[in-house]
Length: 444
Image (cartoon, rainbow, N blue to C red; front, side, top):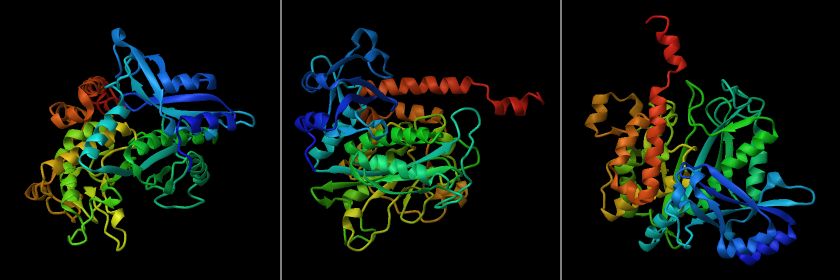
């Protein structure tokens, strides 16, 4: 495959008759931002970047320091399949956000992830991740969610009427070089999953942002609405983003040890222990919305109990069983993130927690293979099983005192993110819901 450098991009612009180039970046909350340039501006964009006002972007700059520069990363160049026309094409590239002096902007989530990846690289590691993003298809985006099907886990037609939507989405992703491992109907009605094949964490964060937009664009083409809201339907499973992750040293999986009863190296064990120890601190980043905690309740396959296992899917971390000859597939699966998080920040804090475990040589507790949902509180306590925060309001003060998260994100993103979440929680806390009106108005 040709190296996607500046020369490659400029050549593709001509060969593919690209008339518009969309420059993408992400705000602190994980919303995709975009502006469009014409091909004649591209060389300038590569050399100097394109200036924009950062004061209107959530978590970016204040009015008095609003000048920002978006510099496209040529390695991320792709043609957008849903914008293909007979005679012209539209392409996109992700950007790194810079300050006017050309230095990295500390409010750029992509830069936050790059900093943590550099720390891993300095320790000799490269992070690979494979997220499983779940989502729902509804008839529209307004009012009560109207499902498209009553299918269940792995159901096929006629119950699964969204097979064509998933197929078209996969074809669109593959056309952009995003590899898909498999797709299927999920447990809840109208819920689906498309799993991306593991790759390095920065490429995957870019891919996850592209994935979310692609799912929504293809759904719109079919006249329906796709949502990554973690818990849109009461009484049904919510949507998660289980993140499979492993560290590599060169071509070797640093998590694998053929002589260990769990086939885990000391590095792998300490990485998992780091995520367990710091999971409450990073919860606000990987489950960042009020609605996220409607999913993170016991039952509904939601991993709320801080423990690890190999077979037990009620644990927060699962280590898939080793298959002979598949050493490089050794990995751990962190199960509490949801698909509405900011993937750059989520991957950054997960990596930071794992690296802290390695640096401090955290000891990994024994796995819990029993169904934790069925345990009494006393039994969970006797086994030392703690729980994730129960609400956004619970998660905020835990992260606020976390040195690990502050260091991973940097002061700017840390403070801006916290401020936004406090506002969200206050707005939610003061809101009078239909539940309250229906329950209390007739009796009080």
